[in-house]
Amino acid sequence: MIRRESVAGSFYPAHEDDERKYFEHFNAILEKHNIKLPDIKPRAVIVPHAGHIYSGFTANFAYRLLQQSGIKKFVVIGPSHRVGYVGSSLCGFESYATPFGPLVWDEEMYKRLTERFKLVCHPQAHAEHSTEVQFPFIKYYIPDAKILEIVYSEEDPANLAPVIEYILGFDEWGVIISTDLSHFYTLDEANKLDAVCIQAIEKLDRNLLHKGCEACGKIGVEAMLIAAKDMHLKPMILDYRTSADASGDTSRVVGYVSVAFV
Image (cartoon, rainbow, N blue to C red; front, side, top):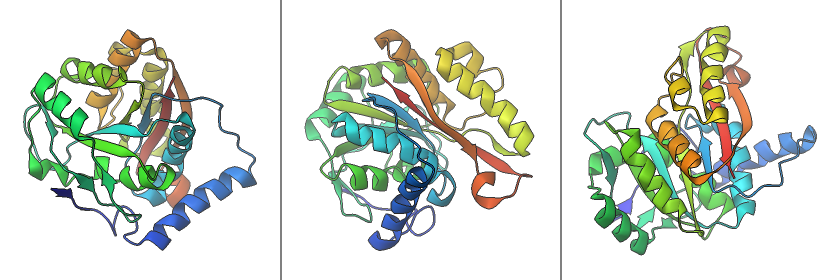
């Protein structure tokens, strides 16, 4: 079973050469401004999931660090934007299409997760951009990576956190949490709301997360905070910006953050 692209050509280029130009552009900006990446090897990251033209630069920080982490197996976890159901979905996709060629699954971890956590498959939920926009990044920076995709809907973060902890219990595995922050506020309003999210992440504070943070993937973020606290992982904010940085429109912006956990 192949996990085919559903937003190629809209959220990111469908063709390899066009997509490659995005990554080259992001890295050229880092070099031009002499922006140095921290010398860390994250076990997990939080990344945004808008179109690459808007949030790709922010996400790129995290994937550059994952590249240097040495980890080559990842579970990508994101919210369902189109399909509602109870719980989290994990399907037995043997490969995941990207403009750079397919990513392959890890059958052993798939079996472990489905058996241990009774995860079921909602196939229609996996035509999902929150997870899919991560696949080209993974394939570009870690060509021989293996992945699995979990898409959640009506989920309790306390149920998802043990899944994350179990995955991170294997040294060769990492976790990628997908979320955007506030949506369609003015730039000033977005900065204030997003500051709540960022402070909650920095402090691993679940309660603060519910005092103004409007991240669409807040369930996944909260689950990650639970797991990080239990596993003594330290968050590091890598980049924050909004869609206004790309569009120039400050009247209706979306917020983006990338975070590493070490």
